[in-house]
Length: 272
Image 1 (tube, rainbow, N blue to C red):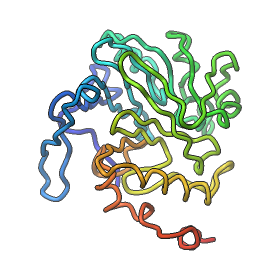
Image 2 (image 1 turned 180 degrees about the vertical axis):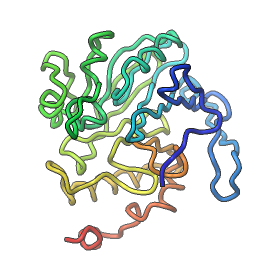
Image 3 (image 1 turned 90 degrees about the vertical axis):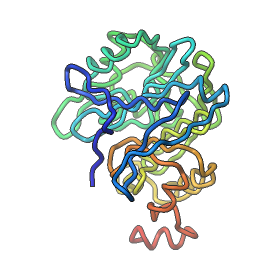
Image 4 (image 1 turned 120 degrees about the vertical axis):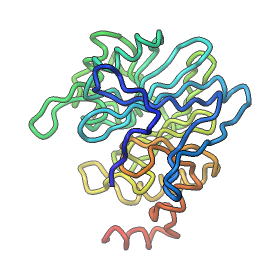
């Protein structure tokens, strides 16, 4: 089952991307599959959360999500996993008068950062840097893969470790290393929000049958994410379910991969 843009999405005039402003300083909206209605999700009203700016952007034929994250008061932002249509993403940044401070990559697969895939060339972070030169943040184990896939140089990269933090205006982003899908896959935690890339989807997890993937690493990464507070809002890397975001508590209810009791059971589920 595939996601669809939320009813209150802002459709850009190019019709190339759909943007959902999550509206953390006020009430946000979420589709409720149980009664087929849109209901209000009450967001935290504390100062840190109301300062947080997040836009969820669906882009490309593989239903990728890119994200704009930053500070409401300063308009400084980073962009997560820029790919497919860099022109549309740049248009969005310019239309909202955002100041781009960096590009954050969850992992090195071309549908998230650009490069060659299936005989096609996908726009990505290298194209972004031609228009808006900014540092590219990748996990230290993922840096070489990012360079190989995208063609950017070592001087363009900022290699980070799990637990490192990046301040964007008044907002602090924490890097969480979550290997499994790739050796250097990472998530980004901001207040009670988690951008999970291809590590965790609302109804599943990233593939572990690809070069560089590891079944055991994925199990432990999912266990790490399952330990986050239940009210953590999960923002995945693809629109693969019938809702574009969910709390960790909601995800645990619908995602069997978040309820595996031990490694042996996990390996059995994975066919090992």
